Length: 294
Image (cartoon, rainbow, N blue to C red; front, side, top):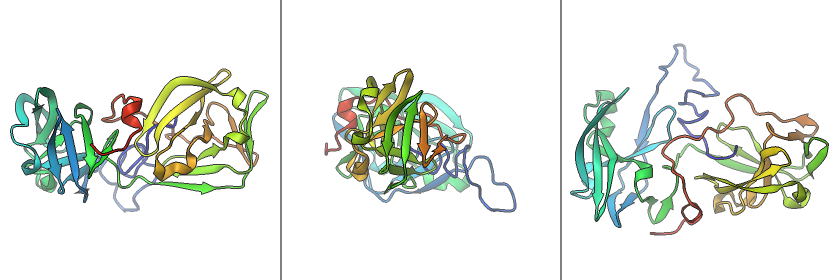
């Protein structure tokens, strides 16, 4: 289902376990490659009614199988916010990790932050830096705009193109959509997703369901059953401005209903089904839709 995107280290990105490409090198690369780089954007963390971290020197860590994680310099975290706990873990690549309770005002978050204390030399960029558990904090911001879901992956890309190819969607013997003006959305590492204007869809075949998902790059997604084909279609009714061309268009899941492009049946390749993962939390509509200053 259309839910969340791919990037450098997640889903089918080049540093993920399910990468669809390969590095053209004579020797095999290690199975786990970690990558760190400066975010080059001001990032802030909101918790308990206060700004507890504010930095223009954030490092993003890309770790196989995870969304990127933001690491803040200790000096850019508010004093008395972090209370070290007795809980420690050992990261497979970065060594001993200490965990903190995050406190602000009357609010506290056990294990709301962590720090790697015994870093190998090759990971010195993370020295004296703290990461906050995304779901445990109230909100993260870049400048004055809230970033919802997880830290934005700068290697995640979406391109939208108009097409004149014929797209026909069927379920059993019924034609659900027939168009010669589909819009195709290309998203890093995933199969192209084809969207259809509602004028070219038999909307009487779509039964809205309560199920919704959230994509940090596209917005809140609504779903439809098509007869016995559960969640066979979806739509971003109010997509984010950056991908506004797909707003209120309908897309169909080729593994659930028949989707033909110029007579060729579309099918997802192995590994292209979206896997929910990472520091996302169950967002309500009020959190997912607005992108306003705090």
